[in-house]
Length: 150
Image 1 (cartoon, rainbow, N blue to C red):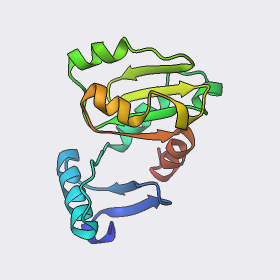
Image 2: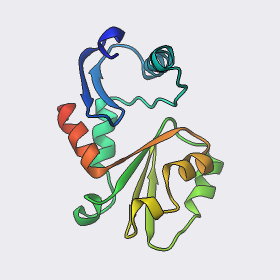
Image 3: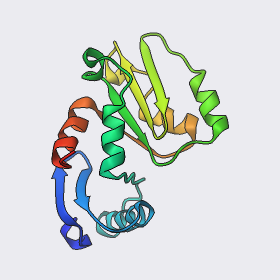
Image 4: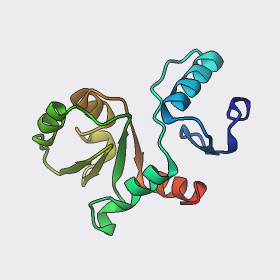
């Protein structure tokens, strides 16, 4: 599908829904183009998050966690910066054995319990911040950094 959209140097990281490509279009135009292509090809309406390689690298390298936690952490990338009110409310949330830091368009998350049992999951974050988001673990983020030549 990427080839049909006219992107330069498209790369897909296995079946994770992560694409790396070059384009001169704006992030908003890319979101619309990709959303339409997914709907046209599969009939699915899904939120699409597009970020530049520079922003991606900043998100990856700005994790507030020490390396031993970072390698077991998750990155929730937000489609846009949430309202100030939603950020304030969100930052008051606390769950035992779960740590998070919100910074711009990313919520960095670490927990000592399994990902399937945490309360601070992608759906929870989207609901509380009222923005679309996508979450990836450290290993996926690291692989995407390599694919993007960051």
